[in-house]
Image (cartoon, rainbow, N blue to C red; front, side, top):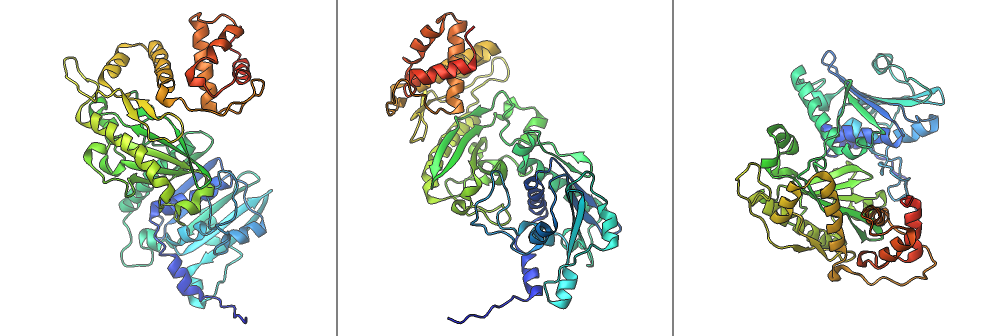
Length: 490
């Protein structure tokens, strides 16, 4: 069959790519992804208002690019989205650098350093529109280079976007005033501290906007003593392991005014409820139940975190902007069950504070001691941690007693007859594979038994451990390995 190779006209395609649907915040976040993929540990984002001809620069100390890599990066569509990517890699289509930049301004310049050698390229959309050809400059104009500066160290990359017609109205009749320009920058800052909070919390990467460090904003308030955390559940959806955990934020009565305002996020409490979908610790989507439930005031304390590997992109239909997503059919029923529990607990706390703020203040909560977990593997029932009696007990305990009591409750939950799962039997001498969570639980329990003098040596300890219903799937050899590696027996 005969074919004809047709090359699309440059000017209309470029202008179509400019209208892919980014806003300023999602565009900058997409550009930052490239710096993270390049293993940058320090990322500086600078917004310069200039003299009505502002510029945005993103500087990282990552691996940089050689000539061939830079050319590939500047090509339109430089990756096959179906190709297998490296662990933690955020890019997928090879479009983000160009489409995100073009959504902000008409000129994109990239200066990069690889093993001490500089390489550069520049797209100027005014030139592309004029000649209607895909003409990429191999050098950056001198006036732009002055704005970009130099790269310290042997490697790194500087991206500069100027002619900011979309970001600040450059070249048009209505250019943003300087105060409005920096208000827009402030909104970008709030978006980045949210989208990259899990990455920043690891302290392996630091980001700055105009010299000020971006401080991560945790939407789940994990550091607050009254936040409730559900157990992490692992779902297998289309051969991918998906982690799900719900969080119930504290009732307003347990938050100071600044805490309450901060916890509401930049969209407000009602619009921050729902599913939070992450890929490789980078937030993709949030603030919606995605058709599983409607939003309502009483569910505003419920936030459900879902962690995807990058291999799951096609199943979840992650778009180029990394801000649009669709739930796979296989995930909906499982997520609906987990979300229903989170919403129920949120409503109980929202309507009936389970902890009194001041002496004499009455409280009321659900009196059900057990709740269905919504899991098909693992515990079928979970203890109602928001029960008012349980909450009051924790209030009266010191930290050490609370930790001990919490450990006991875990074993009550795992040891319930309804939660004991028939596990395939393995030879006693065979060491099994175990999760970090199982190891931690065995170690915690074993340490506590020794501390309370319930067991005095390894033999006694192992005899007790293998009889616990909570550890029904683990054999003696596995228990011994965990205890030995934990080095808890003197």
